Every structure is written in structure tokens, then in C-alpha cells.
Length: 505
Image 1 (cartoon, rainbow, N blue to C red):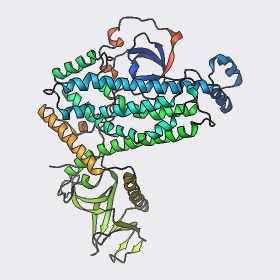
Image 2: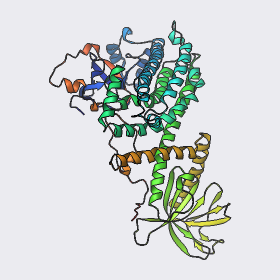
Image 3: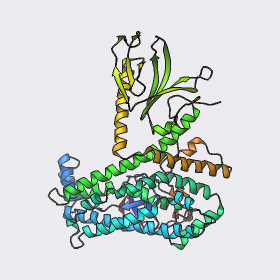
Image 4: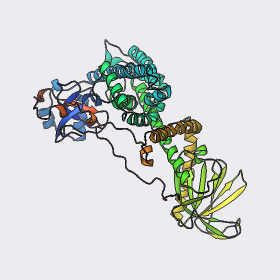
């Protein structure tokens, strides 16, 4: 990042000192000043505090009455109605701007790329742009309904909570886009190595007269947008009086949009988890039966336990609890960090029973810190001993948690086979492109974290083009901004996912 660029993270507040350049503004945050991209932040709807905010601060002792009299006057405080009007207008304006940005991507990139089949196949376009056209169609319909709900003569009286509740199922369309987004970034990364594609994308941006940021920045818009809705509704609810007819619908809408955001994040997490499961299975020797991701989507718990056999013999095994199954392995005798598959227990048709310390009637042996799992399908019982009583409680808790997660997946409509098919298509393609480009990808590169775009990639920012030029910065026109994303690229940290290393010869 350039030394004159200002780094920030989502949720931080920037005081804007210079807005002369429409794309890049100069701002201050704590003791740091610098340039930042205007497209990555939003103006606070209310630049001034309300009378209710001041009263709350006085009540909680944040400021005293003397300081309040010195700092505030009647002219600098907003009423709740004025504040609510500002937030309603901001929500409507942000929605219109969002649709304009998506339209620019569709008209400026997708439509032009569709006319170049020798460069872009239909499959490639789907990987890069996901279901952005479907999102645009949904967002346009949502905006039409939102405009009907807003009273232009008295914006503070508008009732928009019901509009969000009406479209709650439609917002789930963002899930597919967010799952595909890391793939789009990886696809672009590979394409940009070819100068033809780099020049094509830049020509598209210039012809559409879009701001000077890479295509990756525009593709981040829908990911950011679905996360903004709860923040906007929370701010609107803050300035809505309890007696307002929109108060209760707004509370329901806020809860609804929070749940949708959580659901999208959970589906994205599961998509990433599926690849980790597939990679782990590939390191296990002598795997038998169905593939891990045919049945499971995530690891819940793992650890060593002793399996007690009916003949009285004991076997040290390492158990991995996934949703819908418990897989157990042994360590390779020669390579102790290599797992050898030994079996699995289906958790959908089993009973877990804690055992008392002492002699177990089923095996005829003395057990301690043990529990049994009875598999109804196989009509077979497994007696497992933990090293300590605490370990046993952790296992029993994990097994209860596994059942809750399976039920929650059913409630959320999680379709494992659909996710598996999507993952297989995505990662087979990624690896194939890597081989074709002669760029061997490491596993850590295949699992891409939440994409964070750095505006430092833009070489035409004022920071880079005016390093030696001193600009006039007016402190009288400063305003507060809330970043909508981080301007610092995150560096992936390679961590071991399973508690035991695995290696294949």
C-alpha cells in the first residue's frame, strides 16, 4: 500500500478532510491521514447527534451537563424525526446506487464479454459473474416495492419494515453469489496473467465510464450489500419511536436480515469445509466405502479413545466426529502421523449411553470414563473409553451438538449433494486451469478466504499520482464516513485443520 494511502477496516470511522476528487478522498483516522477510495465507504446518514443521544449520554454519565452545554446547542442536535428522515433517504439512495453499479457491471462487462465467445465461454462467465443478473432482477423488484413504501412528503412516516419481510426469501439468492465469489476472484487472477484479458477488462471499464478500480472491486458489491442491510435497519430502528407503526415490523425485518446474513455465511463456510474434508480423506490410507463428503460437510470434534472389544481386547483409535457419522482410524505403525481407515459409525440411527465406572456387562471388562454407542442399523454396540472424565463429557457434548447441527441443516434447507456437485465443478476447474497455466497451486491457495480488495492495487490513485503535490485540505467541510470494507488485504495464514498431521508416501 502506498505511504499516502489510508488503511482501514469495516466499522471504523473516517473524518473526511478533502472530497475534491470524486473517486479518492483525503481523510483522517486517529493519528493517521491519507487517501482512500470513496466507493468503499458510506456517508453517515446523520452527521450530528440527536437530542435523545445527548440525553442518554448524560444519563449514563459519559459527559456532564457543563460539557454538554459547551459542546452542543439546539442548532446542532437533530430530532428523532429528522434523524429518521435522513436514514430513510439514505436507504433509498443506497439502493438506487447499488442497482446502478450492478447495471454498469452487466452492461459494461457481461454483455461485452458475451459477444467474445473466443475469449469467454458461458461457463467462464458464470464463474466470474455468478448469478449477478438474477440479483439485479431481484434488486430492481425490491427497489420498486421500497419506493412505494416511502412517503416523499413525510419520509419520517414511511413504513419500510414490511418490504424487507416480504422479500426475505428473495434475499437468499445472495448465498449462491457469495459462495461463488472466491472462485470469481481466482478466475480473474489467472486471466489477468494474459494481457488480452487485462486490456479487455480495462477497455470495458473505460467505455462504461466506471471509477478506476479493478473488476474485483465491482464484484465485491453484492457481498458487501447483503451485509449492509442489517446495519441500515439497525440505524433506522434506533431513530424510530416505539409508538411508530413501523417499529415492530422493523424489529422483525432486522432479525430476518440478520438471520439471512448468518445463513449465507454458514453456507459459505460449509462450501469451504467440503474441500477440506475431501483433501483430508485423500491423506487417509485404505479408505473404504462412501466418500466423506457423500455424507458429511464439517468436522465437529476429534480425539483419541480406546475401543473395547467383546473379547476383552483394547484398541487405541483416533475418532473424527462429522455430521452424520463418526469415523475412526489408527496410526500407521511406521509413519505415526499417517492415518489408516478402520471404520465408521452412522450417527443418524444410533443411541449414545454414558456408562458407570466398573464392569461392563456387554464386554465383560472393567471400564472407566466410558460410554457406548449402539448402532441400530448394524445392531452393534461400541464401547469407548476416554482418558479422563472431562474428555468423556466433551465427547458426549459434541455428540449432542452433532444432532443439533444436523437438525439445523434440515431447517435451513442445506442440500449436501448440491453443494458437493458445486464444489467438485469449482475445484476441478481451478486445478485444471492451474495445470494449463503451468502454475502449480498449493493447497493453501485453493482455500480462499473472504476476499478483501486492496485499493493499493490501483496505480492511478491520487496517492500515487500526486506524491510530490501538496493539496489544499479544508477542515471546515469534514464529515464522518463508515467504511464498508477493509482496505488492508488479509494475508492467509496456513493452519492445520485437523489436530493430527497426515501424510502420504
